[in-house]
Image (tube, rainbow, N blue to C red; front, side):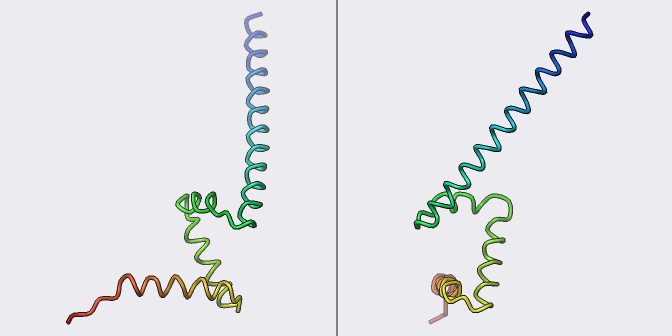
Length: 95
């Protein structure tokens, strides 16, 4: 009898975990869609907040450079802006 109760409790816990995982996946999908819509409207706040996570900054920079190298004008302009900003900030000569 105790074994049957343990099995039922385990099954209930597994079902609850599965419902949680499904709800979390649905919420992640909803937020991703909403974030993409905001980005397409020019609101990049959510994307900026994700730049420090894992290697996202490197992935974005690699994509930017590849697009610029393939002739995308907007990517080339963005890359030039970053390159020139870096040069402006770090240029130092002795007088």
